[in-house]
Structures are given as structure tokens and as C-alpha cells.
Amino acid sequence: MKPAILAVCSILAVSLTLNGQNSTRGVGIYPGDPKAYNGATLVLETQAYRNLALHRPAYASSSYDYNLTAQLVTDGIRDTRLPRWASTASSVRGVLPRKEREHPIDDNPITSVDLPGTGGWVQVEPAGRDTPLEVDRVDVVARAWSFAQQPGAWTCVVLGSDDGQTWTELGRTSGTEVPPAPEWMHAKQLKTSIPFSSSSHSRFYRLRIDGPNVGRWQVGEVALFDKNKHLEVGGPYDFTSVWKSAGSGEEWIYVDLGVVCAVDHVLIFWVERAAEGAIQISDDAKIWRTVQSLPAGGGLTDDLRLSQVEHGRYVRVLMTRPASPDGYVLSELEVFGRGGPMPRPQTAPTARVNQRIELARGAWRIQRVRILPVR
Image (tube, rainbow, N blue to C red; front, side, top):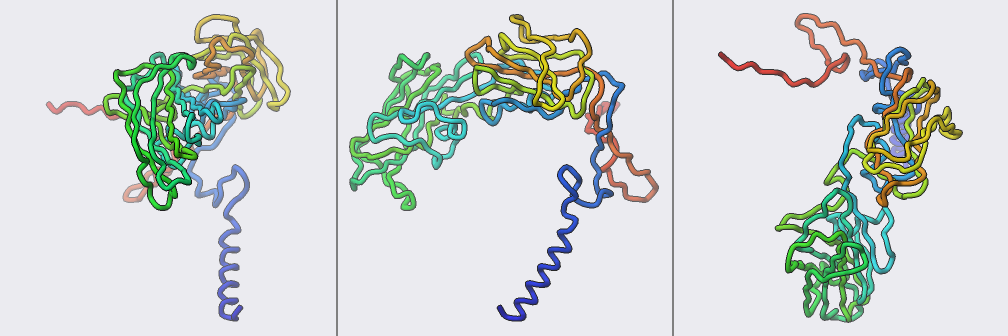
């Protein structure tokens, strides 16, 4: 390496070292000058009786997808609606795992599901809510891989079912040749629309795609429509503030109160309740002690007043048997007692005449202003 280049590299190394020395002060510590931090500070509150779980971190044994997560049970939103969720499957792999579940319905034709040239299918189940979607058309995007120069004829059929066992044909389309795709795909690309003879309210939709001269299909998109409106299935498009378990066996969800607190009252707001379970408390989230069993039956709210004040940092709802085949769906977990950290805003700067004031500190809040009519 030439001396000039060595000198430049040395200067850069020294500069990066000097500038990077104070880039972080440790995990959870403001990365810079403490005087530049304008956020709230956490102060232990031991006197006020309150919901200790509000906005605290929550953890669960599982979650059905990346939208129905544990953190939603401490966000302060009590929701009573059953959420929308989606399940997808294929003839090759059965029910698709969570990381691949949205591949055929994510509006991205590059993520895809592999099928054989003939006899394969992709299935979409728009689940949840109290009423099924109304669908009158399915659009399909797929890539055809074949050693033949011309993949030849193809057929797409959409079937509907209410139970996943008995199927009815809803519509079909076919062609004599798969159109060419962009050169970088090295495959043929099929885009087709399959209108139904009448609107369907099926719970399951299955796309069967066949091409005798096709070696392998990659189905990139199965889009559901109603009156030319694209119906987004599950995901963040139809938000409900609930946690949903991935399974229907033993599951749990717990909240970290921050420090050991005194607890005597737990409120649970269910959408799909547990038929059996218990409230548990722990100091380390490893060893749990049961303080009260969940009611065997009842409505969607469990108002549990403990027989005595319990002390612990973590409060867990252990669920051992669901009351519904949909598993456990929990909207809000509220834990009442005393203790725990509370945010306290830093003192706002003193206002002075003709002086700029930064509004980063203080207990500022957004509030609607009432505008009186002009008389």
C-alpha cells in the first residue's frame, strides 16, 4: 500500500475511534450525553392503586401470526371482536408454517408456493370474524417451469368449501399456452382471472392448477375479489387489538411489572376464553406459583379478586384447555395493585421573554381545542 493511502487510512481510523468512543453507554442507557436526553424517567410508585400491567412488556408461549402478538394485551384497548386471520395450505406441504403462510396472499408474486405440473392445489382460508367474506372472483399469478419450448394448455379451477372436506366448483378458466415471462424469470408467467357464476361465502377456497406440459408451478398470488374490490386476507389489514395463540393445547401469556409489586386483583378480557387455567405469579419468570384458578365457565370477562395480597414481578395466565376450536384469543390483561415504575416527565424549561424554548421536556400532550363560534 502506498504511503499516502496509509496516511489517509490512519487518519480515518483515528477519527472513527475518537467519534465512536461515546456512541453507547450500555444496553438500556441513552447513547450519548445524558443532558441531551429529553424523555421521561421511570420512578417507583408505591402508593397509587392502579393497573400495573398497562403498557408493560408482555410475553407469550406462541402467537398465531406477527399481528396478533402478546404486547396487545397491555395496550389499554379492550376489544370484543374476533380477529381476522388467514391459513394457507398446499397439496405438497399441507398447512404452511407461519413464515410462509402469507406467500400466496401477500400481494407479492415473487414469494410463491411450489406445485407439481398437474394435480396440485393451493388453499386459502380467510378465518375469524363472525361472518365469512363474500367472494366473486379470484385472480392468479403463477410461473410455469418446463423443459418443453411451449408449456402448452393449462387449466385453473377454484373450489369452495365450508368444512374443508366437501368441495364445490365456483369457477374455472383455461388457455392453450402460458404466455412468456420477463427474461430474468427463465419461465413462463400465467396471469388469469377466474370469475364465479355467483358470489360465494365459503370458508375455504382452493385453487387447482394443471398443465400437462409443465414440470413445476410456482403460484405467486391468489387474490380474492368482491365486486372488483381486492379483499385483503388476515394480516394487518383488519386490525383487532388481541393476542391469539398458535396452538390449542397448553399456552401462557405473562406481563412483566418491572419490579416486585403487591397484587390483589386481575381482570381478563377474553374473545375466546380458556375453559381451564390459572393465574400465576413469579419473581423470576421461571418458578411460578398458582394463586387462583380460572373459572370453568362464564362470560368473556374474568374479574378475579385474590384471597390475599400477592407479591411478584411477573403475572401469568396459564391456559390448559380452550373453550373454542379457534384456541385462545385474549384482548386485555389488567393487574391491579401497588408498586412498579411510572414515567415522570422532566421539568420543562422556564419561559423567558424573547427567548427560544425547546418543548421537548415537560408534560406536554395533544389536546383538541374547542373553538367557540363567532357571535
